[in-house]
Length: 117
Image (cartoon, rainbow, N blue to C red; front, side, top):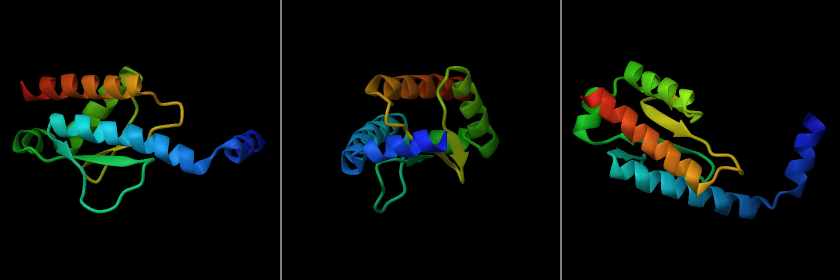
C-alpha cells in the first residue's frame, strides 16, 4: 500500500495538484460564505480549509456538539468533514469534483436549516 501511494505521489505534479485543490477550496469558501461561514484571516493553503460560523444566527445554533451532529449527518450522505476548534475542516482529495462541493454545500445548508427550525 505504501509503495502504491509513493508511486502515485511521484507521478503527481504538485503545483498542478495545489492549483486544482485551491479551485475546490475557493468554491467551498464562496459557498460557505453564502450560508454564513467564513475563514480565519491570513494566508491559507489549497488542500484544506476551515469554515467557521460567522453569522450570529449560525454562531447561536452551532455549539460544538451541534457541529459534530451536523458532521455525522453529512457522513450519512457520504460527505466527510471534521470538526476542529469551532470550525468545519474540509480537506478535499485530488478526485474531489465541483459536483462533490455542491453536494457538500447543499447537504450542509439543509442540515443547518434543520437545526435552526
